[in-house]
Image (cartoon, rainbow, N blue to C red; front, side, top):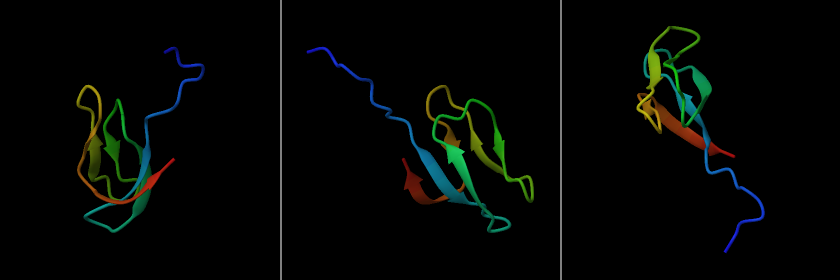
Length: 62
């Protein structure tokens, strides 16, 4: 069966920094290191496909 439309299977996450409690939205498949904008703590590191998240996930966004 051929799909007529391509659905997006990637997600965004609202995460909380473990150091400063700042909430930030990051992409599930980040291709670069994602740092906290407040304190600079690494929140996600690229791992080829999905990023390795180093922060607590608060919500999954679509």
